[in-house]
Amino acid sequence: MSEKSKSMNPGVGCDVSACKYNTVDCHCSAERISVQNEKANTKGETYCSTFCPRGTC
Image 1 (cartoon, rainbow, N blue to C red):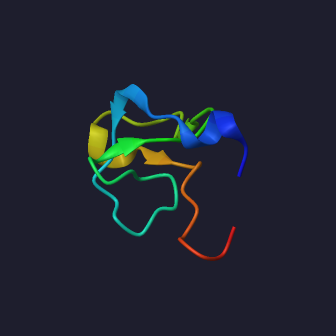
Image 2 (image 1 turned 120 degrees about the vertical axis):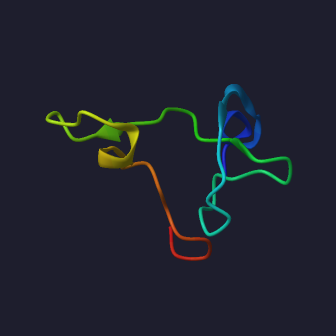
């Protein structure tokens, strides 16, 4: 893991405990994030394509 990916992104919260980028205090530590679904009308219709299951990426 690079030094950049270890740092927290304070503006992005994350509640997905199964994602390797989720920090202990529920923030995203990914260097960049990508949220998908160009036809989304609600937040429930979007998803984070940066998600990576712990131990697999």
